[in-house]
Length: 428
Image (tube, rainbow, N blue to C red; front, side, top):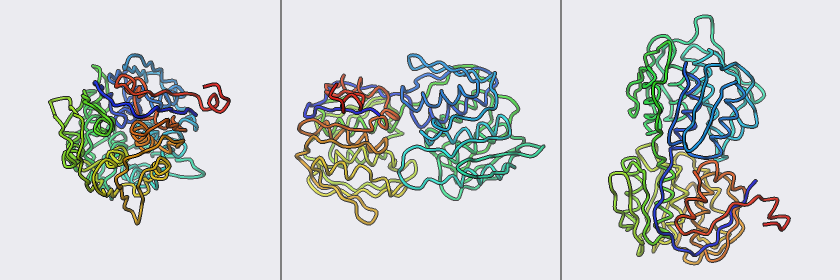
């Protein structure tokens, strides 16, 4: 594991360019194996999850190359093979191989997916969708086996009992080559789902209604990539840098954003008193002072994203009163609280509600990034703090944030990544 060391107290200024969306990328890569031609993606973030997904592709004889933000995947010689359990268990999004393998081979076998430990995230809605499409699903000893009969998958009506991004995408991947019409009701509306549908449609799929709560899919026999797919900007990375810029910035431009994807987040920043200047594809964050407390309640898109409740928390320390955060999606997403308290933050969780009090004097400390977004909040707090902060398990941060050290350094931060074993042996 790696460790991130932050020398705090330096105001940030300049500009930062947001990379492609992690939550799109981790679904697009499994989706690529549905193609009958090589596939090219542009604006691919350089994050650990991408490299782990490439390892999974390699195990199936799918060749891939990644250079300068361009990922090329050639699934034309794909073979069915056991997927590497270590890579599968390192990221939750590996479950998209269930839908894509089912669409490609009419069957799939893989270990139960891993990822961040942020509370229960069952895959029962995914399984319900696969069964509706005509598959049989068997779970045993941490392995999921999905099979179909002689007739394969067929179109069906799928009603999701709860709004789920993962189940919506997996349903699309499984249904896109199924015979007949599939209708997904109570579908999630996230921009990343529109991105997946756009990619598939450009290859000849018939997916309609992405971005609404009803998606209709007419199955097609083949998918062929004719051009490079450019991944949408990462709204979670953008929100993280916006929070960071308001908390410890002296004038920062956040570039390559789609402001409409961030409206729930920027509305809360403006409510706090941050004088954002929102342009067509960039947002300028001036030096922000005299901030007011707010209440944040996470909701499915277009509501306030659960992935942004932790990154906004350090900014709430600068408000002149108590703020409240309620995460209705993952109420157990509180790994950042104990770590922030080590830094002198006044924050507590009580009965599903996070209370954030003003905390002017954060102190650099040794903390642990229990998962991606908790790690992001610790990075921002470390930049705000007096002294040095050492964040262990920094691999979790690198899983989700494209070239973060390079981007922070360009903003005047003093940040480095070191190997944990070297630090322990005094070789840093």
